[in-house]
Image (cartoon, rainbow, N blue to C red):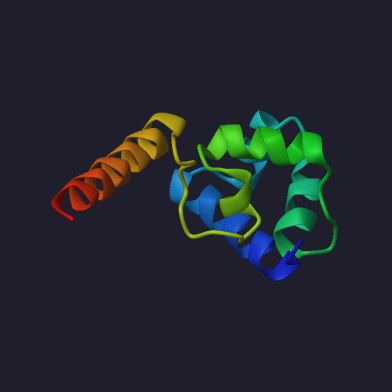
Length: 97
């Protein structure tokens, strides 16, 4: 985990949500001190916290961990639709040959 990215993103999400560290910590079921440690990089969270934080802020784990710039997970239906469109386009090209 890139701690610098995670810390920055976690703190930014909280500020964007407009909640204090105390409120976010209570909602995430941890102490305010522990959330502060996560936000300043003094401690690394475990998987249960990451899952709660993703749900709380409405982002993917990849976004929270700094692995992608997309906050939302690609929905399987969207991926299937895009693949189907590509296949139709390829089929049209084959028919033209």
